Image (cartoon, rainbow, N blue to C red; front, top):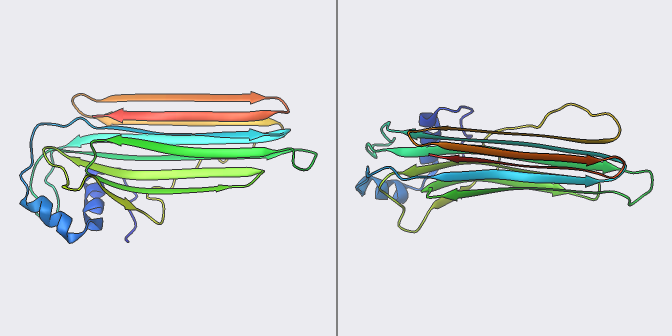
Length: 216
């Protein structure tokens, strides 16, 4: 599978999605009638990280973007409105303590989409007693007035489509928590919402959580 484009251009992202689709799906789309009224789409991306111990670090980053477009679809599929969404989330946790076994760390990420026809996503996670990380990224496309016969087409990537990294700052000893969430939407009736929380308790734990919602 080819690497996704390192760009926020909707046209480039749509072309990447179409290159991953099976020929029968593209043929189905070519033969279908589409271009109906705009269909509202919603995407939510988020996650959390928690670490318990004398010295703890939790870091989170969430990004979510949505845009309406009326550009022609690639591969001769035709014209018609569509919405493109792209997002990332990465959460990390680590902990240290003077005594063996006195630490714990956990991290998770999640996403939820409504009315997307094609979804390409990557997810990975790693964890042990002292550290944990979770990452996801996705690109999604919804075509107004058309839906795949068997439901949304979901393709799993073997590598992330967008390399995102949390703040690389090395915190001092103690309990540290940092989190960022961004959301951007372009459309006539668009909506963005972000929420973040960060909490530390000295010599006990660190915690972060965040979500980013976009709708167009």
